[in-house]
Image (tube, rainbow over all chains, first blue to last red; front, side):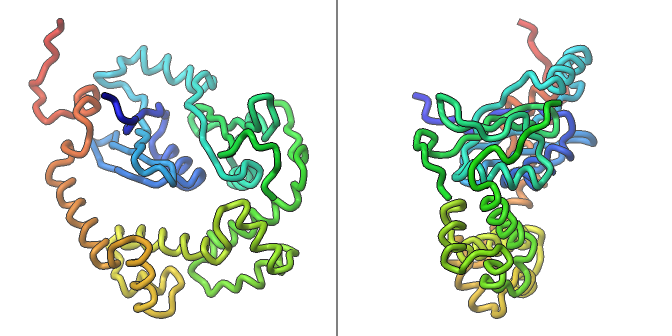
Length: 144
Length: 153
């Protein structure tokens, strides 16, 4: 019986830049940063209140897993913003939006009320995008 | 790219002020922060400020300041900073109040927390691959036995 998701991937173009984005801008907690040879490291982070989910900041570098052509194509698609990596939850979407914007995070869409609730979209430093939604997205009232 | 209209939601000015106050705490947690002066700077009455801050962050400004200090203390302890130095670097005046609060919130004393982290780091340096799920290590070609080839089924 499957009980939960514990490790998942975000394919990134540069691990140093991804570290800065996820830890310093989004405020994720560093879990592991273990060197694995000269160019890559095992780099995982967790959302601040979800320590049992590790997101692997998985570098797209030419390796056994990614032959050269595959790596190049994947990097191209990531940069084009094809990959949506999921929904991130916050307590207050407007406060979170203002803070991330102040930290230089690029938003594709500011918070907007949709039929499914209020949502914003932003990109990570590689080009992956996330949806940002408040915890209780079906309550119409703004918190403040 | 299309220009985003950032003033398109209600009370945007209020959000910007509360976010500035939060970022002020993030940047100045090591100083003696007077929460009254933050609320003044943000043009709030003290009680209104506390209420609005709590509704945005789920913590009062004071609780949030303590949270930031303890989180920073964890980082410094992991970076091998001596406990007595950590205490002052994160803005506490007395070692006993720092240790007491840290133990209460983290569930371990600062020195136990540091010891635990050092032991984990030692294990990682001795055997890094045991901390990486095998499937990743294999796919990346990190597995220690370089002769371990695919069977090509």
